Length: 94
Image (tube, rainbow, N blue to C red):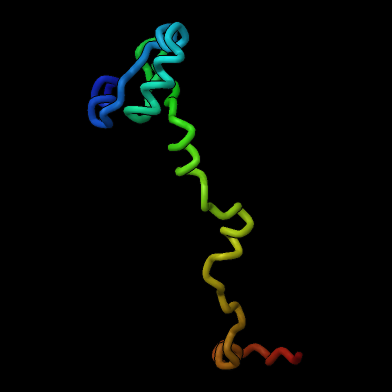
């Protein structure tokens, strides 16, 4: 998919890097009013500028990585006693 098709599908305006540098205030204002703005370099997407409000909405209310890992399903790794009988292994004493 080429940049124009991506931008059209997402209803995002594209800015060439130099144009975005020269008109940064306008790029920011447009991001606040219309949504994310795509910045290209040599015709390829390089960055997307979001309003602070959109960024905060995307990143808030997320657990940190440790909380996310610990919040997953718990596995019972203990084998039932029947598993030892089936394999002929001795019962492990606790």
